[in-house]
Length: 287
Image (cartoon, rainbow, N blue to C red; front, side):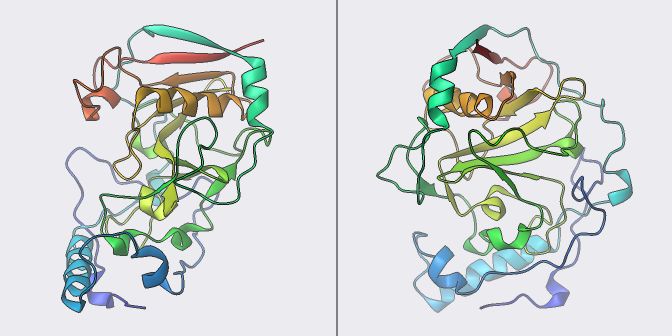
């Protein structure tokens, strides 16, 4: 397995407009990070232009170069100002009451692997993560941070709760055959070129991914968007059924950042997720 020398893993300068934050809500002292064996066989397949040694070296160089400006995190400030945000959500343009039998049906599904030929969780087919350097695909790096739930197993425990748009309290999420996996984004990760967790560090394959925020006042309310460049939503229906997946984890209200427009005509982007006037839909269980 290729390794990056220690002099190439220096901290990245702080991005504009981002406060320094860090780690998991459970522990200030992250366990030792680990890598997965046989990385080339498991993670590099399916990526184009990786057959030659020069291509591998170029990707490793790009990964190492990015590490020189990786995000650094201040664990002492991780939980500061949970209400701080510059995002203003508009009143929901639509509220959807989801029939309880449809949610209960999700609890009976079982899948054995993430398949491109099996329609999973009423959402879609599996696929490898995309739009990333193969050296940034390493789910084994955060086994101590990743949490997983499948329908019927209830809500996520001991999550950090903060206002939507406050990066300190953002969780990355991805759904695959085993359920939904989450990890707090501002978790230091020396094996990521960004210095923190990415979707390709969370999973190597999945159906769809995005970002989550857990409400500070209501433990049954969660905010979600679909801002993953690694596992982007392929259509609005996927996003709607991903919101229903959260209802199957016993959340009662899911605020989903789905714009009131045709996404085929106007691509879904950062402006749809954060800012002064963010459109959203609300999903509730119809009991």
